[in-house]
Length: 507
Image (cartoon, rainbow, N blue to C red; front, side):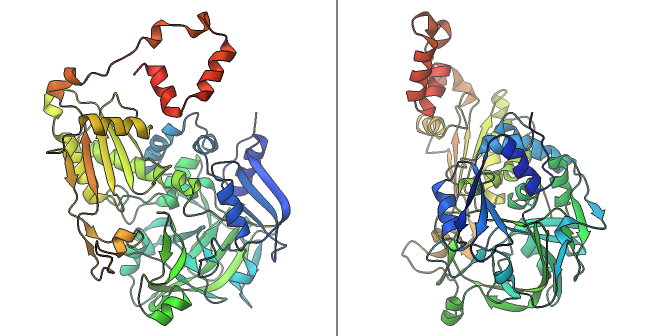
């Protein structure tokens, strides 16, 4: 049996090697275009480990580590990826505080003089349209008084326009942006941790719903509980901050809230946001540059033994699998707080849009539950950032099958009362609808109206008998009475995923 140690990225890769899930690439690859191109071409496949990086002989690069749901489940010791959200919910409710250590692998090498981040760290360039080599895989850590007494970890795109400084995207509707508002006019110490343990990646990617995980929460504690042991942190060498001890690389520094910089040279020349391209973002469109705070680097620290750079793609299965885990846990908890016991499961259609959709399953216990499902939808649409589509269905619908969800919408949605258009709110700016109005003009206002829709695709409890699904007698036939086991397997292999679901249930 494979030895499972997920307290660091490299020990996780060793575990995955034992299960045959790492594809090592020994030939030299260029961090400009080639790594991203290979990752996209092999998306939803094995974890990749690039052994020889052009221009960076001291480093390695990995990606697609979490590009399969079944693999992520194995990383966390689960036999079913559907259980991940519930493990995350337990961690949210029972965090394991981080452990401060005196020495750490991430500080085996310390660079404080002649700092050159782009020349030292193999940051990748994702597409030919990119403004440069943009760091998308670093986990920012705010700690203590800079996060209301708790700890915050997140992914935020960071573009090193200079050797020792970068722009850092800190939206004010996310935890990092909310925290910075309390320290305007000052310098906020922070570390950017690269190649962190998988539990850190999950929490950092999670898009925490702030009503469930508010500012001041211990997000490192959530990661520790999910990992099964406390996350180790170590005092940074040059700033009043902490580093994640098991990281491969750490960039120390501070966010200077007195200095706002453009994310790209082209954006600086234009002088307007949402006009110059940056790099591909998670919705599948090019991210557009804006003006944001400056991150000033004070040190680079890293492991001595060929540190591993984590290079996820924003538009990828890795992103779409990592991001929903905490998000689903928060949505489930929000719904359960509103109406305990009504919602039985939630799922993101994360092969399509990890941040933009959520499917909820309910089991109405009587006529007294009728209507609560729409209150839940309204609460979610008004609370969850970036949400464009929320659908609620009955317990007889497979919420992990887009086809079955669509069947429920087409056969159970009452358009007169069951379609709820959100009132909208602050624009996100990452999707074209957030940047442009219906006439194609750039939105000058920060307010976007009617940006999402919620659909009640449940059957009225009073008429539930009229919505009973037809069922063919698949449970009354044993196919091997007429066919060999090999023939049955061959037919199953021909069937689509949805056909297999219907074949197994008789629906």
